[in-house]
Image (cartoon, rainbow, N blue to C red; front, side, top):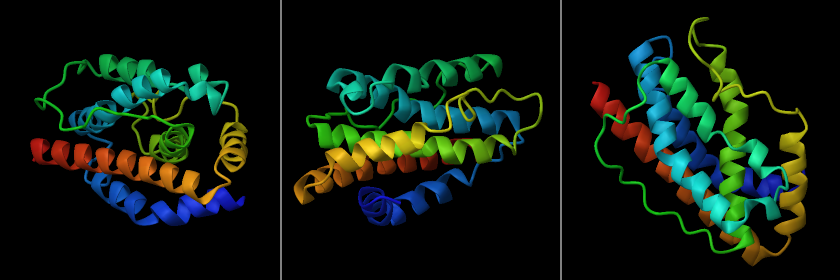
Length: 185
């Protein structure tokens, strides 16, 4: 584990645990709850990917266009015949990623979620779509991103900016999950 990865992991551990706990409230074997789970992700993923596009995420990871998952989550929701939002307006703030370090922090969260997604996809019934949770991606993508983050976030101030952006992303996912959990109850 490189030093930047360790600092990001340690610095976001509690936020990550809160997100995991919030999403644990969804029964992924239930079609409606799986759709709510996907909507909770989409509510954050779609505007965050747009902000990463606008901020030039390919400066951090040149293969950014191949890593995006907005189309995949839309396909899964369409397959479930649940493509329309059902929870009213989002409270997700507009994303402003002004620096390369902030882009790096947001990418750390989005790309890290892929690792958990592969685990979650194993819980899905065989007839449920899984393009978003288990996209076909090269195994080295995570390692390549971590190497890029280590090259970018070598100064303490840059690392702090990345951590702040990562915390903002984790908090948005947590809020969205909790809101969707309340709606399904």
